[in-house]
Image 1 (spheres, rainbow, N blue to C red):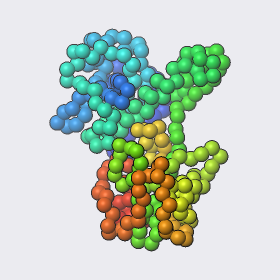
Image 2 (image 1 turned 45 degrees about the vertical axis):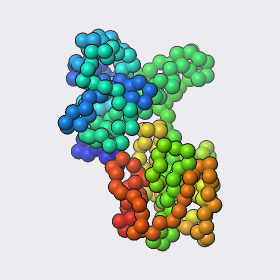
Image 3 (image 1 turned 60 degrees about the vertical axis):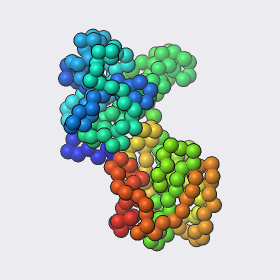
Length: 278
């Protein structure tokens, strides 16, 4: 999965020390990030490469995280007119870009970029939010409102019936490949209850033996995914929620029309079943 970058070491402790010339600068515009494509893969600009055009970046920055001791910072405004080797690329590139640890850095930075952008002003009183010096949070100096980074818990669900697995396709989305059922956890709900509720809502089936598999941070949508397998409990006739799904159908293990990809928990769960490991 995209976050599995070993032997590289990701450190997310909030240690807002100043950048140096070798620190990495992440600059986003909406759904795009400034980067360079090389024979070895993607590269991000370092402060040294941007500083001669943008001296202010050494004063106006936000510390994000480090990988292998290299520090990554978010910068909000730059003059990029003369940066001919760097281009703005859509964040979808990080699903498959190499090296993988750079792709993980790019999409993780994107999640934090969106959080900072969406919380410039206090949602309670409208005043400007300020960065804390000790932890990753924003606070309002007027009303003392505190905001931490947003994470939305969601479940990925592999519904099994012996040698079959239930797969679906989303309705009204750009992503057209087969996926597993999924849904967000509601307030006051245990994740195991979410599994049962989402299966019933989306395909009208009862399930039992809900068991946890693995989790994944999914920065494309500010989500923390939690994967579960469960077993069909009773009838296998599908009642489709057509607002959520374009289709849902059972596949025998040997007929699953999915190939491996490195990015998602959904793909890993499907492939584990297809290969007889579940």
